[in-house]
Length: 210
Image (cartoon, rainbow, N blue to C red):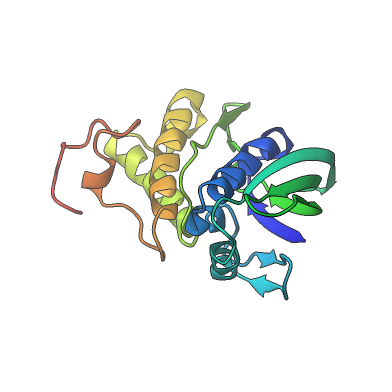
């Protein structure tokens, strides 16, 4: 069985597997599928599929009451941004013997901390967890939000050497990118959706879209 999922890195491999387990145990196939990338290659005990829908269909066909316990056996980092995990998974059923399988899990660090550089300093800003639906447009949303925050706070090119506002703008831009990933298509948030969020409290609350 091969799974392709999105996580921050090796230190949170267990975190993403916990999300997978929670979805399996609750028989929530869409929750299980949300852990996978949109182009995930997945093979359970049937021919492989590509994409989240194949994952959802597979787990939807499993009997209710099935639960899983897992144990991480090995991890490797074949290249920057990729982590390979080798996992034992024990699938328990209410009316049949437990099925034990070994899974290979390939993860990417799409939600790794964002790094920026200003004034000779490296800035690292964590990305909050979110129910990712689609990552299309997240990068564009980040760039546009950074510029919007920068100009909206009266800053210019000469201020880019100051690490403090760069860090604040990065935090604000992350919020916009995260919102974008929670819905399908390249649909960045409106201003009223960001008002009240960290870094965007200067926006009018409940303002009109735009």
